[in-house]
Length: 432
Image (cartoon, rainbow, N blue to C red; front, side, top):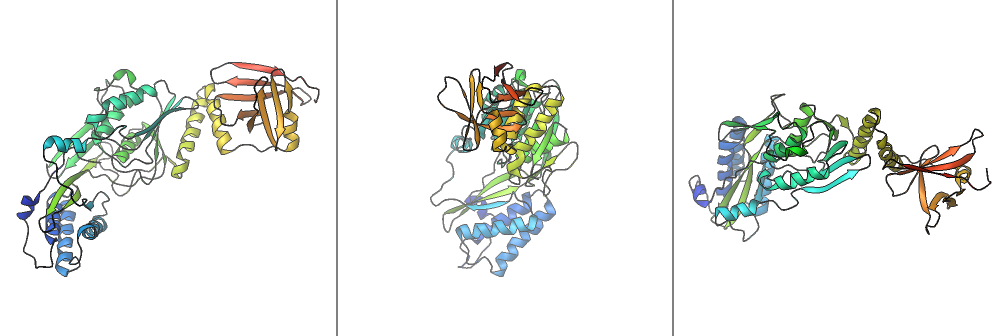
């Protein structure tokens, strides 16, 4: 989760807090500048003070004397994270030859996210399930049109799934923007608040009507898929919706980072090298729990391995939709069953289906039941999903269902289509 504004500390600022070191301390002014920044701005003052002292102790002990560049950045990073247990902390050395932006406009261009702004995939899955695979919450200022387009693509869905398993976070305003489509635009909902230590102020984040309100889906069930890699703003999205009873969280407990950060640029005059300190200077405050997910992560309602989360969410969604009388989800259930638990039939069972049926043909090839419509050149393999029911491998929205007479002989087959119609083919051979 990132603050909207970044702070830049250049060499002239560092000089104000630079002590005198010996000849071996080429970049030790960087350590002192980081220690001071952490003391003055880390979200928890006591922990910030002790972290600053820890860095100075490492400096005084000589443990950092031989470290420069990437080695120094890595060591400082490790010390800060291990001491605070705050995974938002980072210290990085910027590439050789890097220079700071020359103007505010150039800085803004460098910060501007790139299309498609984290929207990795938008699909409509079997059973009319909307699916948005979102890899980041890019700056809300840039993504409003893309979010609107995404919501247009999933309009009319029976259920909506947000896949945040590879989402490392981003802008809390983007969380509010996307969340606004999940609520009644006329009834603002308090999602989260952020307390900033440098500003000693709290900012509230609410759903709002600065969206295409015709696309709002306040009554559509929502699922959020998570993993251990789900972090920061992606955790806020999950945590907000979980505590508001607006979504079912499926997958793994998330990473546990609830502290927005500032980006501080530091420059070593001796080496002309730039460092970046990622400094957590704020904390989330949920209006329901009055706390956040820092260090604990967001616990899912349905706990499972991350790579199983989509299937588990679909299974749960289909079960609820079927219970509500939505027969169309049978096609989604068929696809899910075919992928997760196809039924293996014996040769005798397969042979019972083989034969000619008006305008359809069924044959056995390499212990698999094959199907084609008469007049079509190629046979396609079938997968058994339950007794007398099959789908064509790789084809959604179509189920073949065999009919039996009172003597248990197969006499016909019906094709059922997701569009709502069916057709029936009567068995024309004499095998049964």
